[in-house]
Length: 297
Image (cartoon, rainbow, N blue to C red; front, side):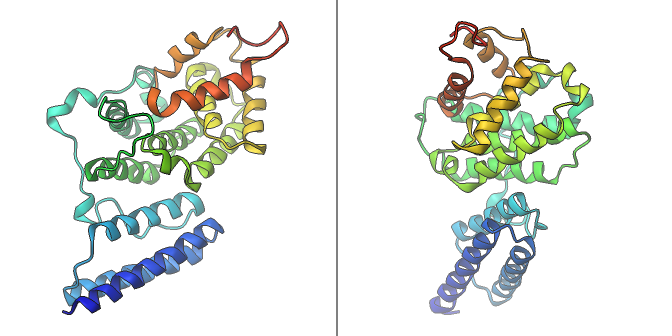
């Protein structure tokens, strides 16, 4: 098999991926599925002809398929186990990292065992992010970390939400696992979509009494979603929703930034990946010139 055949195959696949990405940004799931189906057919042809494709291309195919599904609701063509290069399992020598954050420990009946197991993996990813090996904006780009994230997010997308609260948590967890990676991921269209999607779900469930029993969980979701919302309508609506809850079910839950931080740290929290953004959002909500502001700075 000539190198030209391989080059043509990779360039063709790359071009189709670009088309799929464009259709995803336009919100066209049927078109996305057509392009990803074409990629699947080409991959099968490459396999039959013995054409070896690069690891980077296979990763790009997986991520485009997954992100397109998240953004448009398109059916997934590939899975995190579709490519051996994306294989991931827990490192038994780092078993202490795979712990369930305390805020989730009493929520198995609400969120389900499978989701909580995934949250243990997200916590381990957060531990990697906060290690001294990486600065606040360093790209955590090692293949194993990429596989770790792929496993987490692929499984979250596959989950069936048992309730409206668990549905909100699925989106919040996906957003967190995305923002744990690097500045490039934060600047992509995916977290913006997730933030808007989480806002929509929180608004629709705002009057549900179930949140009254899970005020700290709601606090975490509101701050994570709002912190990564872009300036404009979405961020303003997060601010409005949070302020309304502070006047209602969240009244008295926390009275200062340290107390709020103590709540957020019970869930998925990274100083390096989240602190600056969440503190900026907090300032927009609570730092006010009037003496009757919601919280003391």
